[in-house]
Length: 207
Image (cartoon, rainbow, N blue to C red; front, side, top):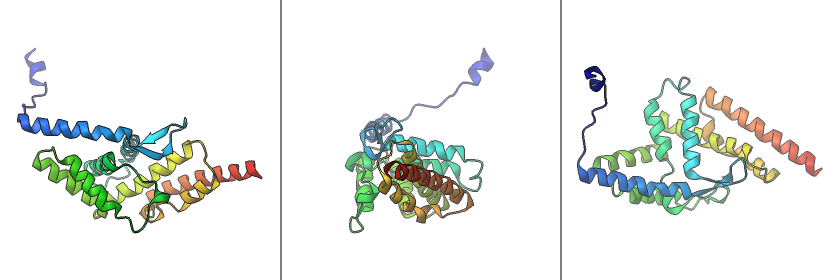
């Protein structure tokens, strides 16, 4: 019995104010579950940003061995927080994004607002991660951005096809981010092959 007890976790309690701030942030972040993206699930239901972030993290987890040269924990942190600002202002689909719209600044402000309840050390850490992702300053951030585009494209391959023009856009979507290394290019090639197959099928159906 003594040996069993000694192997149990022994995390100490934390300051009550710190706990309150963390839980307030967590409850506010729940809004991401209701933040709808332009993509659909395989059954045709609108996809949430939280669902996208979950599958993006899962996607990266599956390539952990191939990403041995990265700070893998940092990479997972980046993808888990990268879209959290959308919990406040929502998602703007890529085709509707305008060059003169300072979306990055707006999302950063929203992210800061969301992080407001957090203890200062966590607030600084999450904001530094957000900036790292947004500016693609590190290898991990560039991988996060590349996989972000790839997850989106693979989701589009699962949803009920909206039309040929939608998939034509996909072929050019995020090419600057996915021309990163042989692994990312290989995955992108599979995504593009799937896109072209759907386009061919749609064109055949409308011919």
